[in-house]
Every structure is written in structure tokens, then in C-alpha cells.
Amino acid sequence: MHLLEKLLQDWKARGHRMTKTRTALLSLFMEETAPLSVDEIETRLKKKRITANPSTLYRELDFLKTENFLSEIVLDGPKRRFEWSHREHHHHLYCEKCKGIEEVEMDNELAELQLSIQKKKGFKISSHTLEFFGLCKNCKNA
Amino acid sequence: MHLLEKLLQDWKARGHRMTKTRTALLSLFMEETAPLSVDEIETRLKKKRITANPSTLYRELDFLKTENFLSEIVLDGPKRRFEWSHREHHHHLYCEKCKGIEEVEMDNELAELQLSIQKKKGFKISSHTLEFFGLCKNCKNA
DNA sequence: CTGGTTGCAAACGGTTTGCAAGGCA
DNA sequence: TGCCTTGCAAACCGTTTGCAACCAG
Image 1 (cartoon, rainbow over the protein chains, first blue to last red):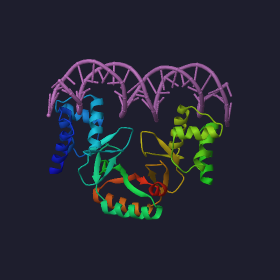
Image 2: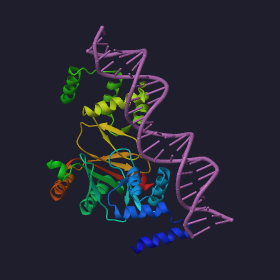
Image 3: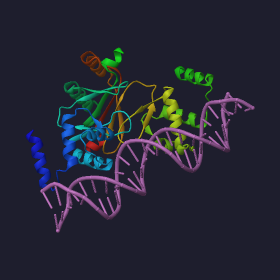
Image 4: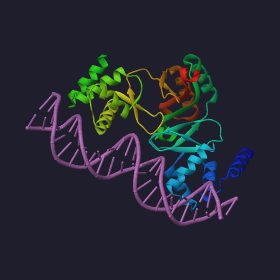
């Protein structure tokens, strides 16, 4: 966790502040593993008696993203989704029935894949998206 | 190509019609391999002296999608993108500099991956998205 | 006090919808 | 002629932006 502290220090040095919303978002994303949309964030915050305007949330999420605290993913519809980025690289299993989101890790397999693509196509890969859709264990058996 | 003809016949039997826009879209997507957004489609059609209202295009694209002629993918921003679906399953290499889109195929590798996930998680996978981002050969060397 | 941060309202961009008019079979 | 399809305009929804007020350092 000292990496996090270092980054926070660096913020302050650059003139940024620790506000109510910012603190709330950081702790929310540290305890929440699923990728959240803005309205999901709003309801999560409401439970903690914290209200924040959508525009504030977007600004804050963009800030935390450029500061590498959060990363953004594209899942289903047109909504932006964010999740804590100080974790191992992973991918999502999106259940089309209950809308639940699970996670899988598969670094080695993909590293191989990317290498072979770079060789075959001369394309320098810097990132990728990989999400799976289907039915989770519960919904499958229901 | 008889698969296509069969589907067209089936349409007519169900009361659908072959209109100017529909024909234009079909031939456009058959000759165009890249996934297109609505405004890209509009300019492609304009070159052929065909104009179509965005709402018409969306309706038509949704129709062609539910009829399994087109499939929809999510690449970069909030724009919907469609491509011809009667082709082998493949994925995209999106160049972040020139915005060009290349393709790769990698069925076997992914089939394996999916199997191991289904076993490990009990999650029944019905589809997935996999897109790569980076620099194409040209942009990399420039 | 200073300038990063906020809420509000308005603008924005892509997409969707209601409805009356148009055109394929 | 019947009804699928179209264009138009307005609504929609998530997101972005300008601006004045606010507040952490």
C-alpha cells in the first residue's frame, strides 16, 4: 500500500486536494471489485450518506483515471465503467441474465497470443479488451 | 452464397421488402470488411449517390442485426459499429495513431481458453469481445 | 487568500421514437 | 391496396462544459 501513499503525496505536491468526494471514491473502489457505472457509484455513495453531482463524479473519475488510480472498461451498453486499477490484469464474465459480473485471470495465455500477433502482423500491441458473455453458474441451472 | 439467397427468400415470405437502403447496405457490407459506424456508412453511401436518414440507418442496421446479417462490436468511443457477420470469427487490431483497423483470426487459441474458463467457473460462455489496441506496422516505424 | 473543486443548468453527440407520408409487392 | 419502410422533428440518455459559489490548504 505504500505505492498508494506515494501517489497521494505526489498529488498534494502538485496542488491537488483531498475532498469528501475524492476520499469516498477511493475507499469505494478499494473495497468494491466490480467495474461500476456512474449511477451505480451514486447509489453506493448514497448508502454512505454522500451525495455528489454526476458532473462532479465524471470529473473526479477522469481525474482518478489519468492519475492511474482507476481504469475504464467497455462492457455492455453505452455507459462508462470504472474499476480500481492497482490489481492484477484480469477480465470479466458478464451474465446476460442477472447482469452480474465475475472475474477471471489469464495472463500467460494472453501474453502468448499477443506475441504471436505482434510477430505475424507487425502490430505493436499496447493494450486489449477481452470480456466474456453468457450465463453464470446460478442462472445456467435455473 | 446460397445461404444469403435463402435468407432473402425467407424475408420476403415474412413480408419484408427489398428497398433502396436495404440493398445498398447489404452490398456495402459485403464489399467492406471493416466495422463501420453510422456516419462512416453515410459517407460511403453518399459516394454511391445514396442518401439515408440516420434514423432509417439505425432501424435498418438493427433489422439486419436481428436477422443475423450484421453483427455489432464495441471498439473505441460511444459509437455503435457494425460489420458483415457471414465470415469466420475474428478480432480487430485498432491503431491508436492512424485509427486504422486490421483483423486477426485466432479461433483455436480462444476455444481452448473458453473451455478452461467454463470448467473453472461454471460459467457458460456464449460470446466474447476481444480487441487489441496499439500501433500498426506503419505508425510504429514512423 | 488562492486556486482546486463543486453544483447547477445548459449544451452536446449519438441514438431512439412517434407520426404522417411514401413506396414496394 | 396494405403495410413495410422512410424522413422529419422531437425526445432521450449518458456525458461534457461554462460559470459562479465553495472550501481545503
